[in-house]
Amino acid sequence: MIALGAVNIGLGELVASVDPGVTLGALGLGSCIAVVVYDGRARVGGLAHVVLPIVPPGHGVMVPGRFAPLAVPELVRRAEELGASRKRLRAWLVGGAHVLPAAALAVGDIGERNARACRDALRSLRVAVAGEAVGGAKGRSVRLAVADGTVAWRTIGEDWRPL
Image (tube, rainbow, N blue to C red):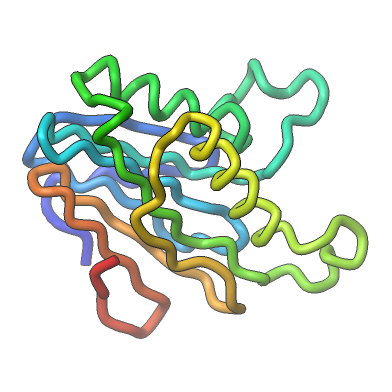
């Protein structure tokens, strides 16, 4: 169960917050990746629900949170606007399951490509990845407690686990 004050981040959305009463979450991540960032000193957290690893021509302006190369820098920028320091930011990746096997024949494993694109974007921003729960064949959900930076994830029917 997501805590009181929960903000569910939908497909292609991203949110950064300093509100200690808020828990950011993404539910039912299949091949999508949730990129979670947190600065423990500033107590700033954020979450992006990334859908695709590349930006199709002409689509980036419409929904920048949807595409890894745009979403990750925008999430970091918003966290910095709220007082986070890029040097102190830590990131977690959750999702990227292989849930669309038929589509993989045409475009490759979207979940793996999403995870790789998010890692690459974080690396280029010099934001360290503190943990991952990616891959496999089951979808996941994730939550971030802005008050203390606790990141937890689960698959359907299982208990929340810290990451």
